[in-house]
Image (cartoon, rainbow, N blue to C red; front, side, top):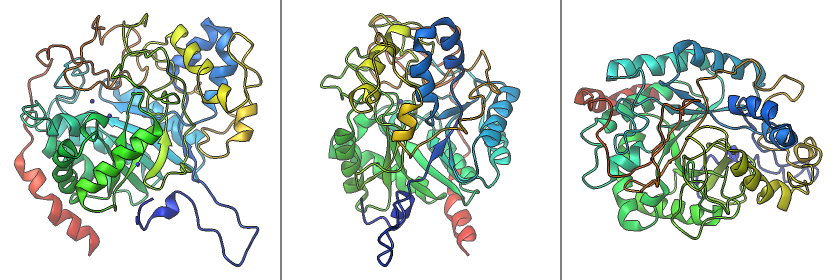
Length: 425
């Protein structure tokens, strides 16, 4: 299911060094969010993990705004972000509520959004709450991949027109940066990347799309993802759209096609706009490190906190290998040590009670994004507690979606170019 270039807005990655001021510093824009609720309970149940989890909480782990949460839960989540994140940071939010989402696997199809009109109301709820705050939106994990895949369900499910609705609505905030999620497997070669390009061109006509997110909830290395981004830009025929990479579990890359609780994985580089790669605008943690992909490789239910999995991710990842922190068995070390080493990508105000204002037991995070047609050894239940509100998309033999496909009115898509022209007048 989920990026320099000649891109003129490279200032988002870093402000230019003043040529006449040798002491000027490169400024990296901080992303901000709130800690996953799964971490709060994990620290209580497994105190030996507390320091490691607190270290991660000092960085922005994207919050999922999904129709599998109640209206009150979504409101509380956004309110917590707005109150805890300073206005000079950029909120990081995953938007996941397209009608008939996860149409291939059908494991995350449930939710309150059943039609385009429902979707418009869902998006308005978000945009009204965020207002004109700086925000990075990851738009609808896996939707473009399922739309571009040959003979896929995305077209009959009305994904294109509904994605246009989303891009139009979210672009109403001039301070919003939109990255539409694309499965990395669709960018692994130029043939498939060419199927993505016309979709992204259409979406770009509806609003201010900056690019695509790659590797959502997956394990591909940063170097590999940079190559995929190059494939994307080549297919687009220009480099004015760039990419964001989910680094939550990609520190060691993955030489295989395994996607479910990969045993060799490690937590990757923290969220930051300082990627060091010209076509990658941000590193993000879209999948909360430690939340299970499902009941495979010893894992727990999808979206629940997986203790052994988190321990491996920590011990084999960035904070131990490059940050100088201890392994879990050795006591993890000082949780505040890493935050002083990594200036960019900080999360909420460190003096606040991280994650305490929003702790809904029904929201757990991101789940899994697997290439369509992947087989899960033991398919997890999306309704197991805590509910996997993210993109828990594990494709076995393509079960029937829970909800009937909802075809968006074609007139919504046709209006995109006219609306964009009016905004630019």
